[in-house]
Length: 262
Ligand SMILES: [Zn+2]
Image 1 (cartoon, rainbow, N blue to C red):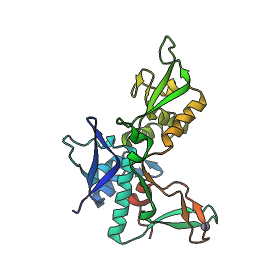
Image 2: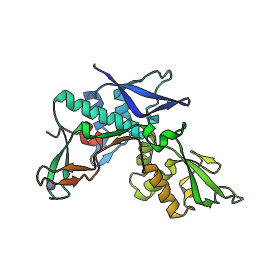
Image 3: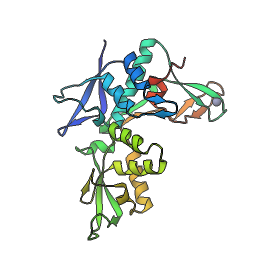
Image 4: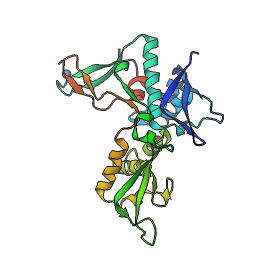
């Protein structure tokens, strides 16, 4: 089967090195059916995202050790899904449409996405790319004093990029509990706070932070994120206005799993 090599916006991290190029193959019927078998009624087993990577990533170029698919950064996995979606449409000769309710005229509409209009941000162009460990340092305005029994005040930390494995775990554990999902996301964004590192930081630890510090951390994470910037506004063919796309475009459910929109 035909394959191609694409360059990831961030790269697969292993042994302190970044591997930017991955060889991919198109989604096969088998991978599609396996992924669909994880959707039952309105329940979705999010591990299907990792199954799609396992079925489509042939190799990480130059990587000598086996790929751990759950370790791809989420933004890179999303980029792979975007590339697979575009490639599939090229092969089938179809245009890319998403179906949403238009925010201006209220009608259900097929919005066309032109792949050449979708912006890709390599990590080098973002704040994350300034640090070789891909972790953004931050300083708290109010020190956190609940990390050890001596109530030592700590005010420094680092942000980390979530992996696809993090996203899958988060939805498996807390998909039905929106409040926990939120706390879990913030916990996963933090690589280090004071003496604690990822794996030994718990959502409860963060409850002592003022709300505005949590919001600052979230904003720092979301600002200038590498990867695919899916269009948030598209042209409505019915009312000829620019409509806000809600829910946001997700390449896997919108393009890879469901019947063609044409
Ligand atoms: Zn409209």
